[in-house]
Amino acid sequence: MKNFKVRWVEDGRERVSVVAYDEPSAKRRAEELEPREGVSSVRVVPVAPGS
View (cartoon, rainbow, N blue to C red):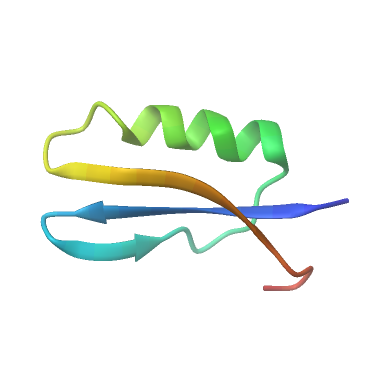
């Protein structure tokens, strides 16, 4: 299984998800973050297993 994390900028600070997701779950989380005020540059990135 490939693992993914979500990265975004919130109020000028780079954030990254603590948990690793499968791709559909990561995309869903990114969609939840995008409309939040102060959030930008939301992206799903692949990570090595165990990261």
